[in-house]
Image 1 (spheres, rainbow, N blue to C red):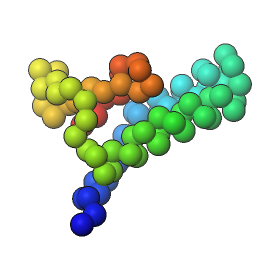
Image 2 (image 1 turned 60 degrees about the vertical axis):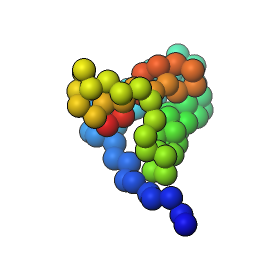
Image 3 (image 1 turned 45 degrees about the vertical axis):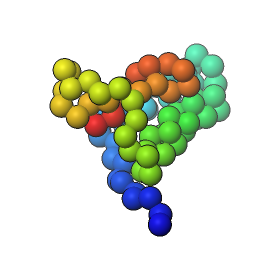
Image 4 (image 1 turned 90 degrees about the vertical axis):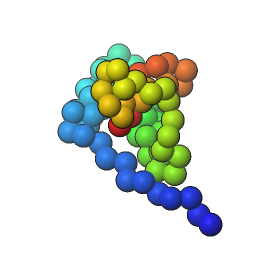
Length: 79
């Protein structure tokens, strides 16, 4: 039996942050580096479709919020 698949939706704020991150990295390094890094973030988020429950619960901040890491750095917020 295949695992359930959940939709992954990027909020407008998350999309804007990814675009800003891309621009920052492209200026500081190169467009190819920025593309690879932001694509890796998107791919990681999309991998949540089949394994949704990850990260530490932080209901003290917002109900249903989980915080996980990406490439060894904390900071991805999942709801």
